[in-house]
Length: 196
Image (tube, rainbow, N blue to C red; front, side, top):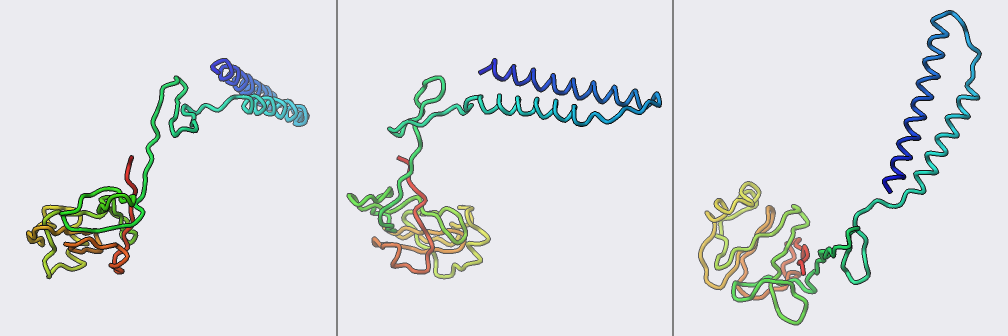
């Protein structure tokens, strides 16, 4: 691999020297008042041949990427070290719930509240606060100006056992019972994926 790169560097250097030499000869002839006939055909042919040779050498150089993918979801780098691929799984059904239901990826076997929600309107992650609910006087401007600063958001939170307050920069909801997300039509939240 290094030999190919060195050969390529040598070809480029030789091409640059030829072009510089021809330019100097032409420049010194013009200074002395001698007008040389245009040799563009010979120069062009030489340059084109060298460029074709360089491009041919470039196509022979193998891929220089450091990581190769294997079928088992593992990756191996050139030094043959295993690199584990990061995979994300999305919830099959999206649930919001009070603090009595655990967070996690809802794959159907166990009921879990998604803790990886992302809003498609404001393109921000959704925050969930256990044992809390939003006060009745919260509004869009409050979240727009204060999200995601938790110290400011806590000004409009009341303690409510078993409840969970969810919010992004444009939407908010307080939930006490397990609720499927599609039942809350004003929320444009999706599962952002859970790392396994």
